[in-house]
Image (cartoon, rainbow, N blue to C red):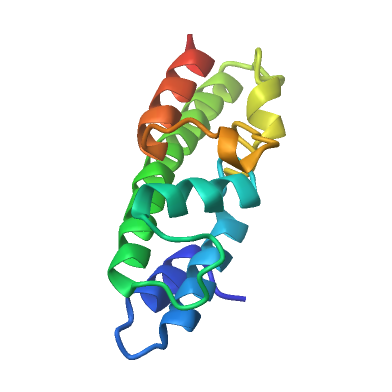
Length: 140
């Protein structure tokens, strides 16, 4: 099973057929989908100008969608690293149960951070911007 970075390479690979590149992007959403798989897919398609049902989309648009997803993932990974650092410090001083981390436990791994049931109802802003706001609220 390929990881996110290997799948991202497949999306960028000009030797691959556009349908394979599309499938690799869809598989990236199995690793990181802040709104849930379907809603994140629709959000990325809308922002990149791709029809969600297009089986052979323009590769440049796929890469644009991937770049938005990667930027958002970096925001999330930075939050995860910071959370892990804080937890190590807390454990060092004897705090065994993290205070107020119900949200973090529910969305471990970056899936379903901000669940959206209706794919058309996802926030129109870039994913990274939405995640920055979400992380700031969680840390407040």
